[in-house]
Length: 386
Image (tube, rainbow, N blue to C red; front, side, top):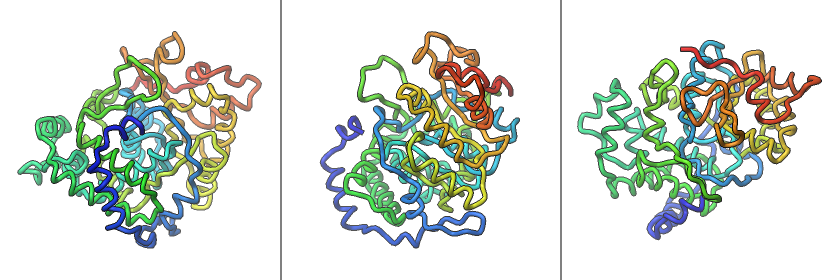
């Protein structure tokens, strides 16, 4: 979070201290998770299933994958629905969740900042009745005068409105206080640094608005990363806007899960010793199977650091069926000179999908994967459908 932290102002620090003193951590009894007739304490569940945070050298406030919607047609064709969803990163997960409609979802990321950002998202969903209120709250912009008539408006209208509407500083400060107040009711033990980090993440959204981007902070790069605007306006392979904010119905799927505490943010290393296995044990406890596991390009780093075998062991600990899939992102020119054969047009990123069962069978066979390229090309399901 270094690049975000450098942009934080003294007023953020003072407001954060005020919030910490004004809104003490509330009892976690106020936030319950109910799954298949079983009740759990939200904060205790987050703590129980999480593990020690690790480091990743980027600020993943938004995705850098313009191809993220390219798997949606294949997800529907394979009837990937219900069950439990697992995913890394920020809100591109919500687009998958809106389609899959899982009974429970876990945000699993090695960065503690990611867990904190998802707490911010959760607070904003709880504060918002619909899409226009959510984006207004996220960006610190006033609602349009006719906001009650926006439920059926296309996503392009939302983008145009927030592009031309300046941030209201007083409103942003009021909303920031409300976000922290809501987060305090979740029952988690957050440090002063955690509270400041949430402030900084929120500040990035209401300052940069639709220009907020994925950034790499620990190495030089000449790559262009898409703005949040581009991600919202991206389409699936049938030419349809399918981001979770594109329709009120999809937004409400995610909001319903957030309001019921069923999107659970964890600090989790995919090749770690605890979190993924703990999620697997919990899913067996509530009699749910994994429907989809979105891993972005994390597997590339697992191959690089020779921890891929540990991730495979963690996958074995998850309850799955023959429809359970892993969704991965491959970045052309980033790892190998070859362009992935399933590349759509000139896309830099390629979204891929494989059944978890086939991946585990390949690892157990007499011909396991040679490297990341082999894994990304051998059995990926054809996505070129509409």
